[in-house]
Amino acid sequence: MTVSEAPAPVVDRAVRAMGGAAHARVVLGRPDPALADRALDHLERRLAELEQRWSRFLPGSDLSRLTAAEGRPLVVHPDTAVLLTAMRDAWHETDHDFDPSLLPALVAGGYARSVVDSTRVTALPPAARDRADLDALRIEGDIVTLPAGTALDPGGIGKGLAADLIADELIDLGVAGCLIEVGGDVRVRGAAPDGIAWRVRVEDPFDTTGTRAVVRLTDGGVATSSQRKRRWLAAGGTEAHHLIDPATLHSASTRIQTVTVIAATASRAEALTKPGFLRSLDDYLGWLPTRGAAALTIDADGVERTTSNWSDYA
Image 1: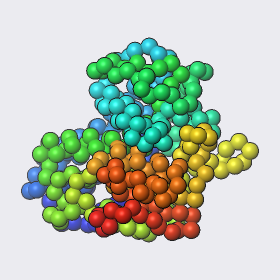
Image 2: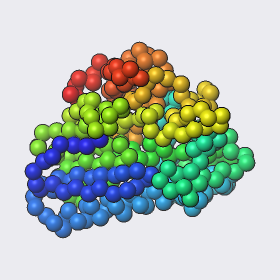
Image 3: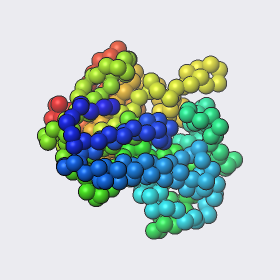
């Protein structure tokens, strides 16, 4: 996703983070090189910190340590407690369609190595099992107890939450507005470059240089999940992707190629994309506005379907 070009005082920075690309566009309000440097340096530092705390590919991350602890309480960074709470909330809101405890199935299906660094491999204890009861997760301040056998994948919700946290922090630093994109998940806050609204491009899944829609948003999150990315050949030569169906523990079988959701935050938008690959399309498009969100889906024939409120953001 990208935004349209805009006049100064606007600064941009693109970096590699969390297994993909990240981008910030910051509206300063007035020329202020020192503020621009502080904001963009903060972006890079925070992305690096959050990846170190949340990556399932790093044995020293909080999530990896919790998995390896096999039920013992551990002290984690407050950022991690926020992530775990967001995971559990999304699990409840989607009636478990969003299920971050499917990491063992993802690894067993062939996605154990990082796509950007093959030396990074997810390590799971023998007791790791799918479909954990996240209500058994205990979070008491910075002390977390993950039930034995539970292994969590931060996946897209981690990228969305990173965008949410950093956007809030840049506003606190004094910028007038910002757009933070992490791996395709976007959060916008504050003044847009044109003083009206941020414009976020929704990519064509069949031609990544093309645009299917442009979302206009003053404050909120936009996330797109796609089964056309993060694909690999599984056992037996069958093609698999990273969107796991909790009912089968295999890649979701659906004609839906991409689901784009607009919600109050990028992390919530990311979690709300998942039911779009699992439920009947009519049910999903009827349900999502009741959650205060909107969606655009694109199927294998390129046919678009939207929620009734999608046009509010066009």
